[in-house]
Length: 477
Image (tube, rainbow, N blue to C red; front, side, top):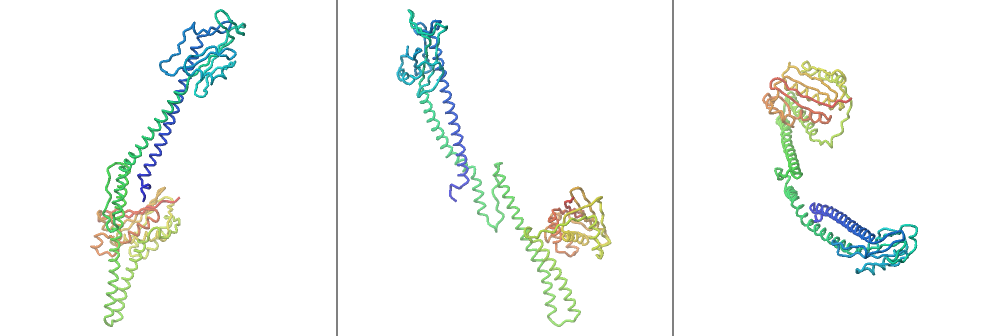
């Protein structure tokens, strides 16, 4: 796989893309704030100049007189190196006075349209200049014409036009843009190398786990990933993967044991059948001897058939098993009918039904499969309890669940054997010692059938007192 497709590269690209967006947004906002601040500062300076120049006018009833010599005007600002240019115009738009600083002539050429008679005050931006204009008018009815007196000329109104060059502002903004671009690029390039290094270090455990996992072989399932102690998602991943390997290994081991046990269980009746046939064929036999051999073969073949059917049922995958035909059964009325099929059994008198439900107990099951489930539990109770002892089937129900307890008073099951009781071919030590016939598949099938009905099969036992198998199924309303 090319390097550009690695997780490290994708994380780095995502991180760098987000960083580029953040840097671009930050630089744009900072540039806009600087632009607003510098232009607002220029306008405030312009307002201050217009106010200072306005103080140099003598405003009276006869008109407005410009008296810069009689009033002290200070337009010097230590914080700024660029001067403010200004000019004073009369009511006809002619220049009466102007600043002596450099740039005044250029300023006059650009703002000449503002020198014509107008009552418009305000600040505007023209080219590289921030221009402010203010009009000063005389007081009274006599201040309508220009007069020349000994003190000086008096005008009906006069204009103050001042300008602040925006070249320093633009220069500062350009310098700021260069600094922001260079700084953002330096940060982005640094993040490129540093981020890739950090991502590589952070994902190094993942690469190590992938390398170890790729070396694992199906023949050796004992290998595990190293468990991290980073207390993060990688530790959870390593533990989850090892847990998966544990379950896979357990499944393989169970399958291996199942195969070995199945081979042994199938080989035993086949060996017995072949042995009986070989003995019968060595010489001519009487009819009674042939009958005895055929009876033995029939018994062994019947046992072999049950083993094969049980193995096929357990080996069939859930996805391949046909969907059961579910029907609604009221256990209160169905169970008495079911127990009629046990009336011919040798232990029929020992079996009793106890119904502790006041209303209907309705479940959704396949009747034939559910019958098979109860047959296995009752047959198991009959085999592992002596004749004459009671076998009680107790029915209990609640709003959400139905429980069927099958209790026998046999020799019980040791507590150490309970966890493996539902494993195929596993039989209790007591049953082997007592010579009770069985293949160890009935309870495995019973649990599989209970799972098909979305229920649960559990067992409790007290040695030489009683054993209770409990089937819990969801109640259907």
